[in-house]
Length: 118
Image (spheres, rainbow, N blue to C red):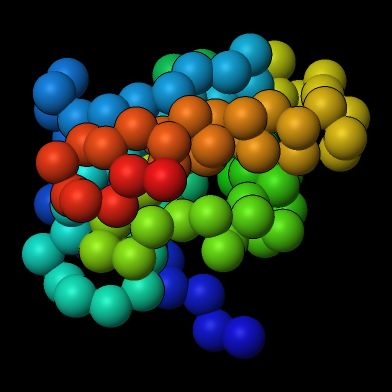
């Protein structure tokens, strides 16, 4: 299955007005997309927080692993940006997936002006 991911820098731009959910391991932000169709997402590990490339890459791999089982929870017509936090490197798979489920459920259950409220 081909993942519909965000690639362009401009698509990662979010404002404080965009809905967001925070967990100990990551922050997720969502905004309506300009492109109709499936939901898109991007993962970010900031160099200022993860100095070494190996840690940035691991954080992004963990986020993708945690997102995979819940891709069906991503609302069509929305872009999601997942920003890794330092604690992600110490999290277990179960902790991460539970945090991902709770964050996506929080965003999904709120109507953020898209008409997709649960």
